[in-house]
Image 1 (spheres, helix red, strand yellow):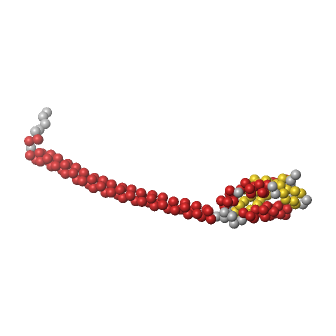
Image 2: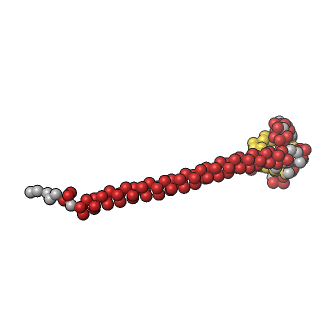
Image 3: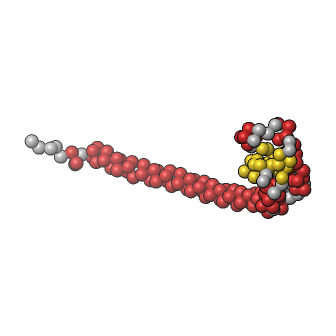
Length: 169
């Protein structure tokens, strides 16, 4: 069996030549469109990168300004109130009446009124002195003498002091 010699036929030659020319033209169109898309995407990426860099610089400036503002605000913070609490377990253990507990708490608050309206930094630096002044205080209530031990001391605009109670020797 023999294949017919169609390569000599002019119509078939034109068909193959048209397919080759169409392939070359379509490849050129594809390369052109792909190039236009790539150029558009690369310019878009460049503008986005520039925008991101500008926003990061702006963010850094805002953060620095915000941290400076926080520092200046923090320097201006002062002690506004005092909260003194006696541990409830100690109240039960030493049979301290609620009225007597309030009396003791008020006595400690009186000693601590010196730190009212002081800078937080100064109060924080003198926290050891505060602890010692509380722990050296002896309060008499119902003919009994009590000493205190600071179990918790939180210093912020409100100073929280939690105390445990023992009998004074």
